[in-house]
Image 1: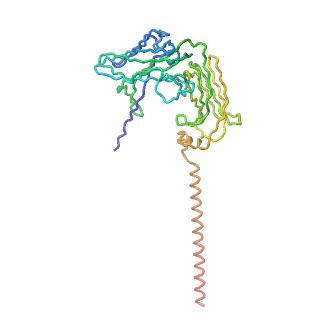
Image 2: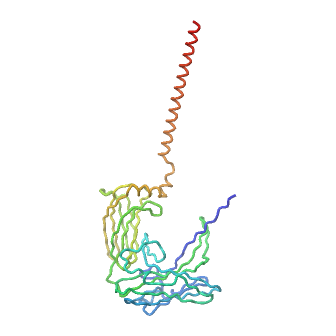
Image 3: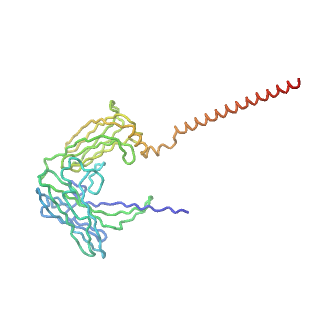
Length: 363
């Protein structure tokens, strides 16, 4: 008997200490977090712009070099290793800003990459019942700039056991990772507003489902809040809306792009020329409107239709194949019928010849 193996899935649960341009709020008292012997404390420097938040909101100057610190505490009886990563703020397809590791590309408008500005060791070893400082080195650009350089530091215990949960799919292990925002600026950016630029419209799969993606960018070094995106897809020379999607309460990171998906509702992708009408608005009064022609090639349609899970699951009975099989069987039956009829006819003819030959011999 074969035993069904349990599947162990590992997921990361992020606890984020951020405010304002960041995802969640945190007071100054929340600069310290603790779980199972490991805790950390954000050490806010003198140039902290807003002392009432739990993330680094630093007012900097051109070419400034500064070391900021985070205290890592280990109250357990064994040595632990803390993994450290630094990532710039980016925007995912749901309009949510991500600060952890991801595969989202940098936007072409990004002049200063957070990962080039802030450096830190990849790991910090914290002895048992002790503390260590995580030092992060900041080197500001030589030229002055407006807006924000934004990102976060993520810390996670290496080889941590995590919390196990049994599900229908198997066992899920939740491992905690802590993120603390780092916001760098040289002055208040109240006069700067988001500005959007359309990049392209193209067909692709979204979670293994056919979709049309609209790729556009926030080309300014400021956050975009309360954004609504409304997209309609139609034929190039038609006003009939084939597919549409509208989503509100979205956000974009400074100098970041978004791949906004428009679902094709489980339908097959059809080659041809199409047109996209796109409207992006914000509650602050921002408005951007585009019309963009795009093409779905035969190769793209075939490729994505073969990979669309909805089409594979809904295929169920392949009527075309069944019709071909039934047609083939009918043709085979017809051929067999004609062959049998021909053989019977020949047999009758042979019998008549034999009977005729016998009568001649008797005469």
